[in-house]
Amino acid sequence: MKEKVEKVLQEIRPYLQAEGGDVELVDVTQEGVVKLKLKGACGACPMSTYTLKLGIEQKLKEKIPEVKEVEQVF
Image (cartoon, helix red, strand yellow):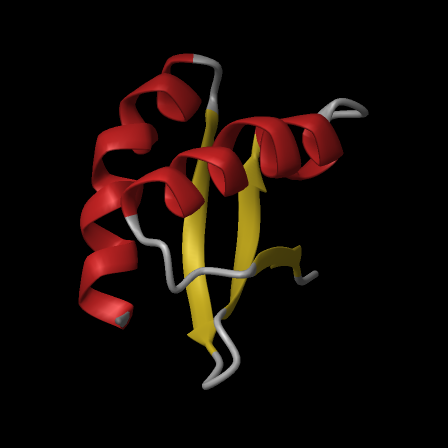
């Protein structure tokens, strides 16, 4: 499933990079929890939780039904 997640992140990355940020895949658990690290401007942005939950998590769940949750790691 890690490869599927990385493929979807490649679709999202240009939008984050346009704002000076990026995302790094840290892990995907057996339970379907995707652990991501927001980098650059996204890591320090006060809206990063919204980006993570309403943007990235929603897109991953839409494209990969096995994804149950997305967590941010620091």
